Length: 127
Image (cartoon, rainbow, N blue to C red; front, side):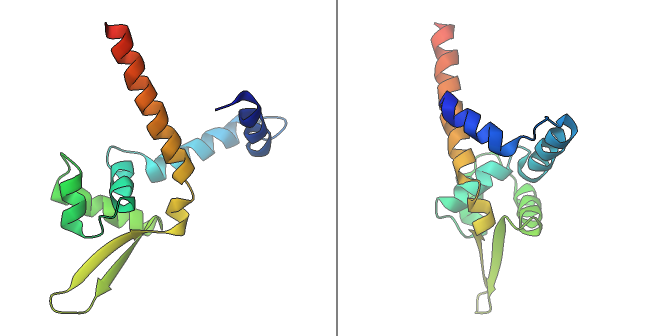
């Protein structure tokens, strides 16, 4: 991120004078909602078009059925995803991202970019 842009965002987000307790609380709130091993991969899967439980499960290596079910319930409670049940035979359950979830899309993109850069950096230093 460019220094000028970073400074502009810091001015908008951080209080003056800085309130470390408020900043730590905001970080903890964010990590509570998005933290853990599975939430971001689940969001990524749903945003890539996987709406059905089994499709989401198959798209995330290593996640168990029980863990996916638990995470989907938590994410629904936190209004990150919407669960829609179609009363047909058979019953169809689909998960979609909410506008609230999409509001941190830029953060996720930045995390992906940073992660790719970090991996390259580590591979480069391992040589």
